[in-house]
Amino acid sequence: MVRKGTSYLNHPTNDNAVCRREKKIGFKCLAVLSAVLFIALMNCSVVMGEIVFEDDFENGNVQGWLLFAPGSTADTGEWEIGDPNGTVAYDEQAQPEDAWEGVGCAFTEQNSTAGVGDVDLGVTYLQSPVIDLSGMTGATLSYYRWFYNRDRGEDDQDFFAVEVRESGEAPWIELERLGHEVLANSWTYRSFPLEEYINLTGTVQFRFGVCDGARFMMGSIVEGAIDNVEVSGSITYGNGDFNDDGDVDFEDFAAFQRCFGNVGTGDCAAANMAGSSIVDDEDWIEFSLKLDGS
Image (cartoon, rainbow, N blue to C red; front, side, top):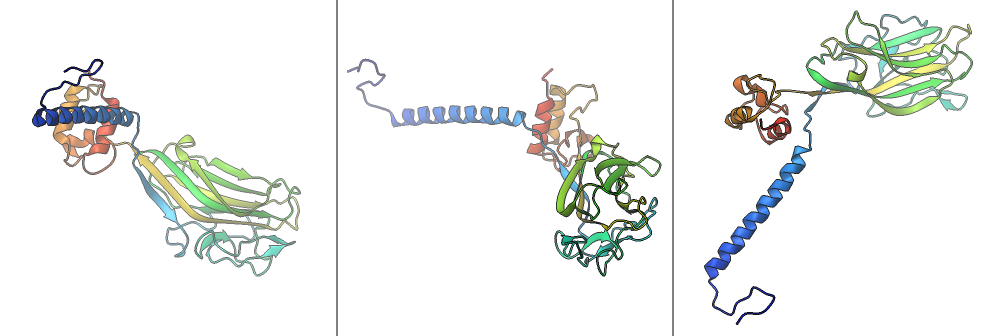
């Protein structure tokens, strides 16, 4: 007996045949899901990041910062690293009592009271050691900052500034500047993509400057502080073009297959596209994005 509108037949069934059909359907579903996942992965990019430099200032000046770096002119206010003594001026927190995190931070001279040991009549710079960003395709500088200026709006030479340069001979490029009208006496997180400002070389430096202008001989009460400085970078490794013909094609695919699971150096350097030491799934994702099939 055949039911109209259905494919059900009134005859004995073969359990093995049913199982085979179910397995076949299951494999088809798995294939479809795999294809969907592959297409999704094709639209992803894998970025290998690493921390190149960091300092939380908990162990003193172990990184070799210059605390009154070249270009500094202030009479007082040299940068220090340690536990700041908080001061208050006109009911406003001038020098921070606490670091952003932990105990230590970098700050402009230890104060016994507000106005004693603050930055006076010039600029004081905290300059980083040389940082190697060569080979990086991107790098981000991040930090927490503090800036206090009691006499806001009175001296346009008062400022807080952050600058970066790609070498000792290159000019300083400004990342941010807080002017004489700004009050920023709370810990504030900031980050900047350095590749948008400089070439990523092996001799990158950055510096933090706090200035008390010289328009008024008495000066303003100006303080600055920095904490949790970090530079993170991303690296591009192999480009997938094993035979250097300017194209990632099936010839390169065959070479990639041979390298899969092996160390991504030497003949397999082109397969090391995600930065891991072993050529793996992440490298395949990057390779597949470049594969044009020609």
